[in-house]
Length: 342
Image (tube, rainbow, N blue to C red; front, top):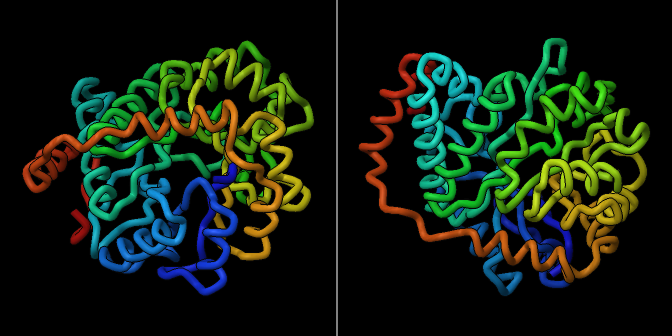
């Protein structure tokens, strides 16, 4: 296996992808809306990828709810944005946490039925006034203890459903005033403020098996390099101050926040301390560059990868229809699904 996660172009593998995957052996696959047909189509794609790789490779997706939901109607239910859990938490803390955990458990049931075993949530970003809306209502709140509590409940719900959570975006994207999909955000807050807010939300989540970096510059710590490619931030903040011990993946290496070729970005992220690099757009010339730059997954990175996958457990039994009705009842005070998506 090599130290990268790849996307593919559509709902079925192309001939080039069928040759690329076994030759380069990415650690895993990530799915986007361009890959999603009906349930049988998604299952077929996942089975084809795993058969082509010759192993039960992890399959990732971003299925948060709200704006970030790759699976949706008519085949799958809609789920609330993260802010809805935060609103319910403010009305009653225990109800908010129960709803967040149950919502994640239901998402896990949707994913596990398709063969998807990794969900890129929870997010522990703590937004501030004036920040770019790329996080916005995806966030669970603006207070780190609240964000960490809801994120922890979501992670627990996913794990109960046999799906591994990926906490993101370490060490925090909430303060960014730009969208890292298109440009590099620069955060100038001092270290004490960051420690008390942005970083504080991630510390209670440090034992989660998987994490994803933020393409954000924190000038108080590294005035030049964004977290994904900063040795100082990965070592001193993510691993030391936050204490994250799990497998650390980059955010999408093809995003506009980063400069240089995708091969150069891949090497920089791995040199900084990321264990694997995430490449999402499915463009074969870029995929080939990433694969060429990504080494075999070995040493401490391989140990963390194995430990992450070992954290997956068989899903606990669930009556999906009954629990979905319970979930909608819990959420009634903070969210109502659009007609036909529940």
